[in-house]
Image 1: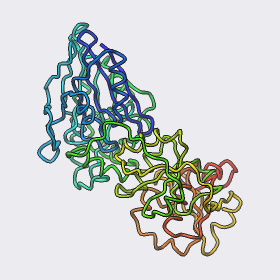
Image 2: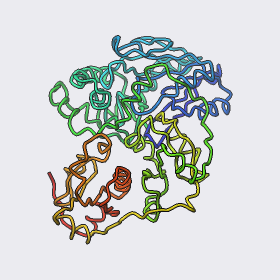
Image 3: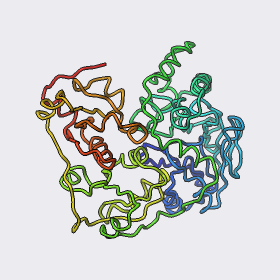
Amino acid sequence: MFFQQVYDKTLAQGSYFIGCQAKNVAIVIDAKRDIDTYLEIAKRNNMRITHVAETHIHADFLSGTRELAEVTGAQMYLSDEGGENWQYEFAHEGLRDGDRLRVGNLSLEVMHTPGHTPESISFLLRDHPASEEPVMIFTGDFVFVGDIGRPDLLEEAAGIMGTKEIGAQQMFESLKKFVALPDYVQVWPGHGAGSACGKALGAVPSSTVGYEKIRNWAFQFGDDYEGFKDYLLRDQPEAPTYFGMMKRLNKVDRPLLVEVPDHPTIAIADVLRAGGLTLVDARHKTKFADGHIKGAINIQHNNALANWAGWMLTYDQRLVIIATEEEKEEITRKLMRIGMDNIEGYVTDLSGVDLVKTHVVDAQAVEELKDKEGYMLLDIRSLSEYQASHIPGAVHRFIGYLPKTDLSDLRNKHLIIQCQSGDRATIAYSYLEKQGFEHLLNYAGSFLDWKAQGKPTVTV
């Protein structure tokens, strides 16, 4: 058996290439959208991708299953579980509980494991030349290392009300199937630490059934369903607003993108002349602070770029990205993984145009200004971060909700913006500046700097 995990750090998402070396055939589970990675693995190992499969209709990334099937001719195997409202709306081979896929000398048994979503399935792998016993399970968003999939995303992100209580009950029952597996079976989940699909995901890439029974909180409640449900639904992270779009695009027929686009480099003067474009400044926050185009949104090119683009941008905006020539391909990959294909081009040179500076303040200035009449210290971290500890007098507004909420009560304030370490603060500063806010101050050091200087904090 050939096995390789493909892990995208930017979305904390794992996909899997599993091949039979005797027959030179392979299956890919939960493919990301830039599929050249899998094509290269297949070429390097003299294998044909004959099967592509998914564990469920994903919410956090745009699946590359259809692109991979289009290029390779592989058959798509997708869940037909969950009822009529949870069916894929394009041609595929349907899978139900107990079905088996044969990939050369390997087989994958389908386990219906609803809870995160009604149609969720897991794949139990057997390597038949070695043993008839299962050796691996690919759990998708069912069981993670140290956590399980949250059942509230359908309400939080897709607006399908009344589903989280049902999902919690389904998850409680599905976990009984997992517990019944041999302890030695390796667990390969769909996500790791940093994903919003759970609240306590571990940072190691894989686990075993036995380890999860001992260590994972979800298996410590026994028959106490109410205790399990309360813990499962409590303190889940905010669900990115782009999740709703991913749920729809992964379910319906849509245009395919089988190669990473090569977008043109555009002169900044032409961009400003054209109008109607959204400028995304992907430079480091310090460069943005030193001089930027007013109205550009600073979403730095790091592992969180796609996540914050999904929160702060909409799918109908025509994007122009400010970045270096060398960053173009990587940024394009990150955005196409969440379906943001509307990139008009890149700007690599800002010379010759007027730039404005960010108004940056330090802890001393924050302490002096935050309680003055007309000023507001705006803490834009997650609610759980704010409740755990915050600067006295800070008002909480989660950054991801700014584009979706009424900001009129903030218009007449001098806003001091802070987050944990400064990255999110510069996003919020730039977004509010684009919305016409004029009295903005950025506490670049943010909460970590405040604590490092020994200043007081409070909890909720």
